[in-house]
Length: 283
Figure 1 (cartoon, helix red, strand yellow):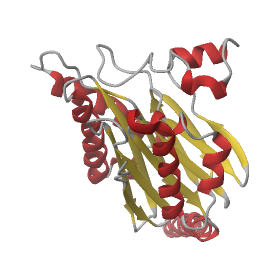
Figure 2 (tube, one colour):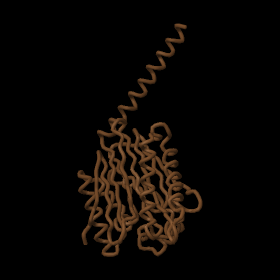
Figure 3 (tube, rainbow, N blue to C red):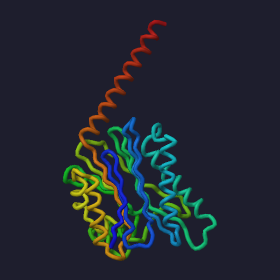
């Protein structure tokens, strides 16, 4: 089977996708970077809806992410507010794109990560996942909005068996439905040696958590990404799902840059405050 992996990379990030055994590609992703602040926005969407609506939906999520990034709202807004706006705006866009369609409804999952300074925040709707690692330890992952996840929470199913459970694809939340989505949020303070993995269900159903963590720690992220997607495609076989994946790492260089920007901002604030106080005294 021709793997057909599409990939790209930027500093400390590698991303890619492949169609697998499906006739169409309904996974989309985008990685955006601001060189001035070293901020990054990583977004992955898995579309659904039938008759071309899945491709339309995933593309709509990514289009909204690009638009909001270019508008620069992330510079002023708190990270969680920006990601909430992204998810709600993407939902509204899918509703708009679905108007007039017959026999198809554009729906999508989304998982988004914003890395800015020494803070990271993320948001997700559906069963596309984010994993966070430090060294060899998985610090946590997002919980799917699916019937299978409910069974895990209720003790009826082991988490490792979710990928093969019949209820895995029964989603409880998504973008494009009749009601605005309830978005799940998370955040963390960054440190060197942390890694993030964002992926669609086509990846996590085939690769175990430890396996993803091992690959994300590799020195060559792009090569690791191709190996991860290759494994998912091989295990999925001729009828395997679309696969999409993003690796992001926090290295010492990135961490020190963020720390340095924070220190300079504090010093600049104190200097400005001192000048203002001196001006008041002169008056």
